Every structure is written in C-alpha cells, then in structure tokens.
Image (cartoon, rainbow, N blue to C red; front, side):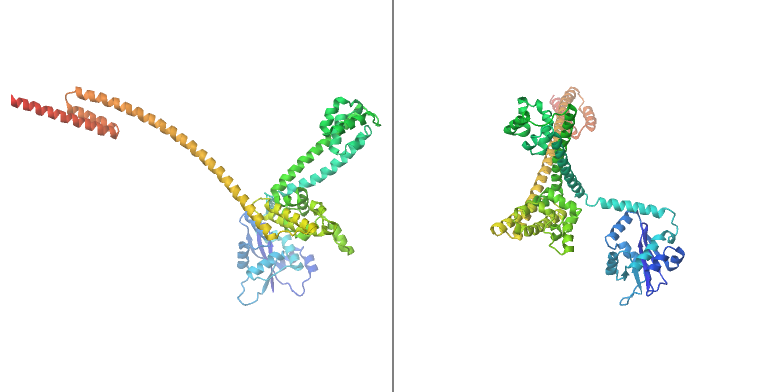
Length: 543
C-alpha cells in the first residue's frame, strides 16, 4: 500500500510519496537514523505535488485552520486533485500520513481518505521538514526561513490579540500585584512598628491599624514635642478624641529611648513610603473592581471581585475558567492537597480558592462541603454567561447570589428555595428589560441629536428665506418705480407704436412678469390712440 505524506509548510502544502517501504518491516529507529542522510532519504521519499499559498494572509488562515484540526477548501481541493482517485465501493490502495491526528480524522470524515498518524509517519515527516528546501525547485536560500519567520510572527500576534475586548490579562496582572502589595505593606508596616517602637513603644497597643500607625509616626516624629497643640491633628488622623488623648498621655510617660534627628528623618521617610503603598493598594483595588465589572460582571456580583479575579488568574483566562466543570472549579487552588490525598488514599479536599468567599464561612461545619459544591456550580454558570454572552449585565449574578443565600437558609432553617427555572426566567426578564432601556436611551440620544440638527437646519433655511424675501422686495420696489417712469414717458411721447417697440425690447431683456404687464400697457395705449383717431374723423365729417 502506497503511503503519502502531507506536510504543511510556511509557503504551502506539500504532498510526498514514500515508496519502497515494507509495512511489516517498518522500524522507527532505523528511519530515525536514516532521515538525516539526504541520499538515502531522497530515494525513499519524493515530492508528488506542491500547492503554494497565495499570500501571507492566506497562509495565516490555513495555519489557523490546521492548528484547530480543520480542513479548509483549499486543502480539500489539493488532496482530491493530487491523490489517486478511489472508485466507489472499493477500498483505497493508499493511505495519507499526517502529523496531527485531529486533522487526519477530519480529512477521513470529509473525504473518506484513509489517514494514519504514528511514530513511523512522524519520523518521515521530520525528514521532510529537514530536507524540504531540497525538494522544492526554484526556491532561493533564505526564502523558507523568511516565510516561517513572518508566519510565526503573524500567528503569534493573532493568538495574542484573540478576544481583545475581554482583557483577562489585565485582571490577572492586577490580582497578582494586589497580593504582592498586601505582603509588602504588611512587611513594611511591621518594620516601621518595630523601628518606631524603640522611640514610642506604647503607641503599638493604642493603634492597631498599620496605615494609621504609619500616619501617626510621620505626624508625631519626636514624642517629647507632642503637646496639647497637636491634639486637633491627632483627632483628625484617629477620628476619636479619647484615643488622641490616650496617645498624649502615653507620650508624657513613655519608656522609649530618644532618637537623633537623622534617625527621625529616616523613620518619617519610611512611614511616608508605607502610606503611599497603602494608598496605591486602594487605587489598585478600585481598578480591579472596575475591570471585573467589565470582564466578568456576573462572577463578580456572585462571589466578589477578589475571589473571582483569583479564579480567573488561576485558570489562566476567563475562557479556560468557563470550560472548567464545576467539580474542577470547586478545588481550584487545592491541587497539592488533591494529589497528596490521591497518593495517600486519603480524603480529597472539599474547596480551594472559593473558601475565601463569605458563603463558605457562614455555613456550618457539616454543610461546608455541600455549600462549596453548590457555590462552585453557580460560579461555573456565571463564568460561562460572562464569557459567551454578547451583552454585559449583572442580573444573572445577582439572581445566582440570591439562590446561594436561599440555599444557606435552607441548610440552617429548612426554608425551601426557589426552583432554578423560575430564577433563570426572572434573570432573563430583567436582562431583557435592561437591554430595552439601553436601546431606548440610545434612541432618545440619537433623536435629540437629530432634532438639534433639524433645528439648526431650519434656522439656516429661515435666515436664507429672509434674505431672499428682502432681495425680492427690493427688486419689486425697483420694478414699480421703473414702471411709473415708463408710463410717464409713454404719455409724453406722441407716437405709441414706436414706444411699444421700445417697450417690447425692454421686456425681452426683463422677466416674464414684466413682459405681461408691459404688453398690457401697450395694448391700452393703442386702444386709446385708435379711439382718439375715430373721434377726430367724426368731427371732420360733421364739419
């Protein structure tokens, strides 16, 4: 049986024929040793067909399809044209060797071409990859490397830019930085407590908060200079007048040693750094909360921003978290305990990162495992809604949180919770209402913009009409005055016919309205002249 090899290179698809190979005597080790020698390998494997890619974009699309185990139309046409045709009802006398079993199974399902993928085929394809530039004619040195480099960059860039709107990486980096800042702030706070306690040891017992302690250390500096004048500042920092007075009394009877001005300056500078780190930690938490509201609003509404971000960072991305079953999500973060339990055949852990949720802490000891399983189920649903839904809403997260609260009441008090179908229907209705409100708001904004544009257009048209009316009124006044002058001249001149001709010539140069009026005036004057002539004839005949 003939064996064809499919090789997907950066420049195109290559089909190679491996002939003279006995299937029974296939030895992977012998092939592995012989592929490095081109003379021996070239006698066994020869190029049957080659289909180059049209462009870099086409190469990227083909590579994406191959990486996902999908056969494109170009690859199908290439295989159907290059491989021997198989008659209907008969078995193929050849097989196609592929590197990836996924694409092999897809090719076999679509085209009925028998495919195989094993160690022997992998070694042959390795030899093809090693000597590929020798098989292709008219291939300049360095062209294949350039194609591989360009395709590798574009493929990696496309993978990095996959799902840009989610920005899971920002959440992962933010939660890592938040955890690091918590450790650093605690370490530095302990250091400043130990450092300043040499000077004012009684302050540690009075003030427990690290941020307030650093603020007080910066404000007090030298305890011997602390007096009633600084009481207002102490009250402003502590927010409690009794504590401020206690600090004053403790400073008067303090057992600490005196520090030099240089030491106090260093303590003050270090306290300032600790305060800045604590303030930056608050800003970073606000940033993480807003990011979680954009990326995973339902998960954040259900379990909180910090725990949700830890789940996303541990899974690698929101998509990976959405693909996890609820049983896996339940023990995320407890992998060591799980494998230790499997190794020692002990009890497996009941919860991982979701233990930090308040729901697990509120449940009783015997119900913690059941509560963790139920909470993991709801977190899995919320993460899938956040990952695959087009619109961003917190309605599902709020309803799922209500379900978890009802489950807690059921475990503690025995109150029967609502059914899941009813809750999901209510969540879908609220989500639809929110979407309708958003659409209405957009339409009103759009209509208001349109009305503003129409008003501006109407104002412009009104102004233009006023200008036109003013111009027409001026023209009408000019025409009226011109007509009066012409009538006077017509009455003064004795010859009506000559005046009619002149008026006709003026009418041709003017508008149509002027023509009509002038022609009427000429006719009236002609009639008056004829009537005067008839009267004169009658007088002569009477005489």
